[in-house]
Each structure stands twice: as structure tokens, then as C-alpha cells.
Length: 418
Image 1: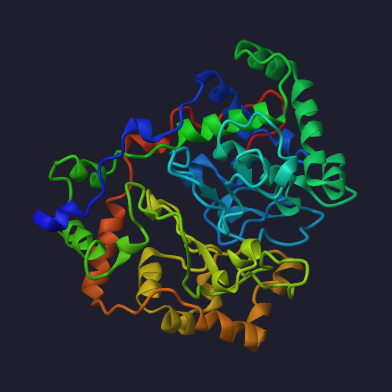
Image 2: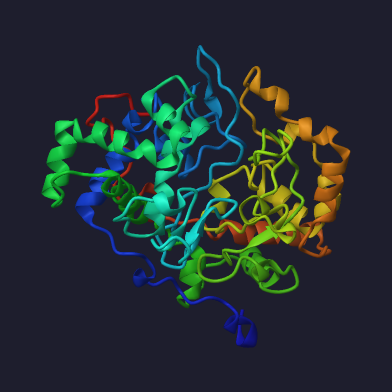
């Protein structure tokens, strides 16, 4: 790619594109990330749904969180079953320590903001604990207190009960659990923190994620640095990506995301992330946070770094391959009509699976979804789709894929590591 077309490409990612991190805190964060001590029932960790073996995700459309047993596509409900699936796909964590991230989660419910006097807008509003180092640390707090992710159901444990009272009531209890483990106290003390609070735990998790999942050593990165690293199909795909296919309109910048929100009419499945007054399975995306009609069914643009490793795709994981996702972008309405439930990767979950497709029976909701599309159809041949997918494979890292520290074999609490 040469001349004016190449000028549209992003600059290579610089090391100072990321927040700084404390190596000692990152080491602690690695252990906490895989330690079930941070879950209400001490049976699930951050790493269960964001695992090294699954490129920092879990390989299914909608995760089985609290109450599940096993890992990734092999995870199943435990003896007591699960109440419902986690409503949205577990996103990959590549490069989320970059400074350019000003919003997190599929609906953007954690963001930078002056509104609450603490620099952040989040579900905790003014009750967010002080001392959080960046937005990634803020984000790390919320899976810990989410009922179907890590907190558990009301009546099961003190964390779930505290969350029911107020969202911030559970965090001091989790911090006390960590302080009660001598090895954690000693490690925090070595990092200069005598009495770790929940903000220190969140900061450690953030420093681990920031340092662990940095991927900027793909063939695309070598190409941006001036090396002939792309094969012929990848080069043709790059020209399409930054040209007539229009992908770079949203997947822009060095991390290939505009951090914006767009409606693509992806097939709806699962329980949906509902508001109090919504039908059970409905998921309005960004509108659920902003209450603006124009934000209905819009979801955040993901980064495409290592995208070939993190199937299935979409905010609810309904599209199993990159070819499927590219075809959906080319004509969302037609692709929605072609979609079949067999395309979703949903581990069997008796009881919870009764809601997997219930939204398709709501003809008015489906009509609203089909009518809300932010991108115009594009016509590409199958050969051009193949080339685009080839380029997406050129975004896969090399040495970075193993991470700096990797998954620990054991954690200080003594609880099992997934």
C-alpha cells in the first residue's frame, strides 16, 4: 500500500501508549486474577472467563458464570445449576491498558467523566472507592459484584447479600478476605501497601491486565514499521479494509477501534442485559446506559487485535467465524435473516436455556432491531471476503501471545485454579 492510501494507516503502537504499571502489583494481580477468593462463593475467578488458554476470553457465546464447572466450551452447570447465562460475550483483554481507552464494557457503563467528582462514570456513581489509578482499575471492580458473574445469588453468601444492600457494600468484605491471607499481606507490604483496600486490589488487577495482554508484534505491526510482512492475500485485504469495504470507519487507529457505539442488528440471544422495566430478554445496548433512543441496539466497537483467536464474535457471540462476521457487516439485515441458532456456541444449561431464543418471539422488538442499523451494505465477492479475513489474521501477535507472566499453578488462598 503506497502513496496517499498508506497515509491513512495508523502509526505503530508506541510503548508510552499504555498506562505505566508497577511490576510488584502486576505479580499480585496475576494471582488475584486467578484466585476464586474474589467471588462470593469462592468458586470462580476473573480467569475463568478470561483465560490464557482461550486468548484472554473463553470461546463461547455467553459464559456460564457463577454456578458453572469447567473451562471454556467444556464448562457446564454445577450440581445446583445456574440461574441464567451471563448476558453478553466475555471480551478479550488485549491492549486494554492503553491510554486511549476511555470507556469499557459492551454498553460503555464505565467511562471517564467529571459527573460524580471522582473522574469516572460507573454503576457505583459517587460510591466508587477512592484511590483507583485508572479506568481499567475501575472496570475490574464490577465483575466481582455482578450476581451472575462472580458475586452469586442473594442468600448464598455475604458478598451477594451486601451487593443487594448497595453496590459498594461488598468491596470491603472482599478486601478483608484478601488481607486475611498472609501471603497477600506480605506481597502488598513489599509493594508499599500495609493494609490493602479494595482500590489496591483493583489496581493490582489492572496492572496485571495492562502488562500481561499487550500485543503489538503482529505481521500488521511489522508492516506499519516498514517491513514487507504481509502476504499477497493479506495485502489485498488491507487495501479493502482501508478502502471500499469501509472497515476502518469504525475500526480505526492503532488498536483498530474508534471506541464508539454502533448498531449492527446482530442476532439476539440469551437473557439480555435488561433494565428494571424491560421485557426479560431485551438488550438495548448503549441506550440502557444513556436512555437516549438514538443509542438503541448500539454496542461498543471492539479492538481487532488477535481477533482470529477470540471467536465467537459480536457482543453476544452469535457469529462463529470471521467469515460470518465479515458477511454480517456487509449486509446486516440479510445476515440476520440467514442466521440460525446452531451458529451460537452455547454450553448446555438446563433451565437457563429456556430464554436463549425467547426474544425472537417478540415480533415488535425484532422489527425495531432490524430497523436500527448504522452501516450501509457493501458488495464484495467471496474472494474479497477471503482477503479481508486473511488481513484479520495478520493482526495476530507472535511472542506476545503467551503473556509476560502466564497463568499461575496455584494461588495464595489455596483454592483451585481454573
